[in-house]
Length: 113
Length: 113
Image (cartoon, rainbow over all chains, first blue to last red; front, side, top):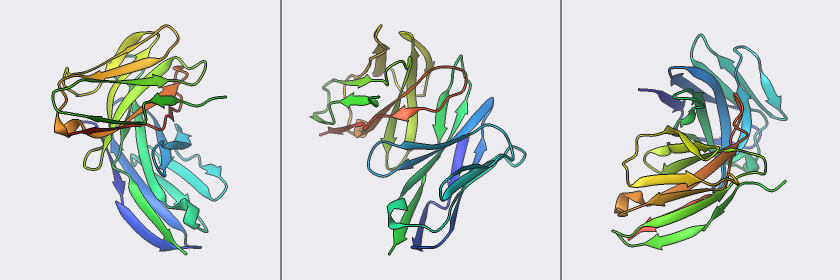
């Protein structure tokens, strides 16, 4: 059965800290890995990774995919209270024609002032 | 451009009733996927529609069904509601091309009493 596992499940840090969130997957017909940030309801898209070893970067956030290790990390540097959210990792798999997103349970990040 | 719009935002239903949720995707997007999010299970894929055809389905009972109209708007129906159907229902739209990120709506919070 396809699965995506995120760790840690929750994390409490102080402003200014750097955090690393982990995502590992066992998915047949892997196509891409996506990271989302969910603050209240709608998950908002952060990154999509399809190629191994290529870092995607947006401001203080960055992510990289390791297809050999079947994993990805999301780094957040100089954390701010506004980074507090649930971070979701999802893998796009192909079953049938287009596929669906298989989500991990998420990492709940709390950034204390 | 406008984002993904889900209606209603909140619903309270009693066991045994049925419910219909609506999702209007981003203009030009032809793929709509539905997800159920609960604290215990996280985000789980229900089904995906593309050009009015269901092209992928998750592991949910037949009480969960959906459809897509020619303008790409989609509806999801749950019949014979159970307490366990209480959840946040999210829909996501994507352009439907080969590999693409999905953009989520704000969700419909369904409470079954």
